Amino acid sequence: MDERDYDDINDVLGMQRKANDLHSFRSLDSRFHLAIAKATHNDVVYQQMVSLMRELEIARHVLPVDSSEQEIENTLDMHSQTLEAISSRDPDRISEVMSRHLAMMEQAWEGVSARKFSAHAQRLGFTISGDV
Image 1: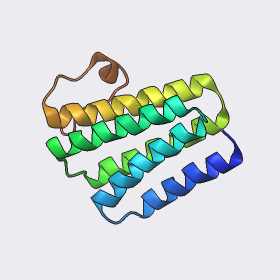
Image 2: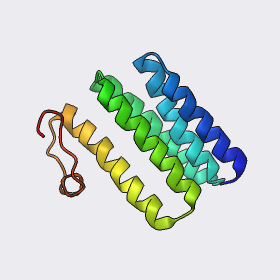
Image 3: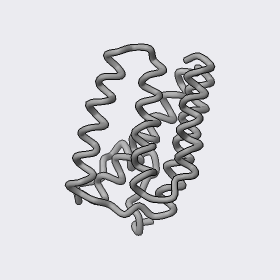
């Protein structure tokens, strides 16, 4: 990731912080992930992320969720941690942050889909809202 890639990702994160509605926030969430994929300078990774974002968009319409302020704050915090980890170029730090990020996403999905919470997410200490 070069300085321009970092700036692009950071710009999207800044816009996401200023988003004033859930639709904009989610659209910028997709842009954040696409910007990270683009920063790999690997067309296969980028196209896979495009495909994943399409699937997630479909899932959001199947199981619409009204995100709470806390969930939005958690997402912004996780995106900040993700960008910092990527910037550090420390593979262990990146892996740890991405594991937590994926567990958080899994928790949110399982919370609305009524699927069982994964052991991985439980090990990382995530709980479904209200089950603290």
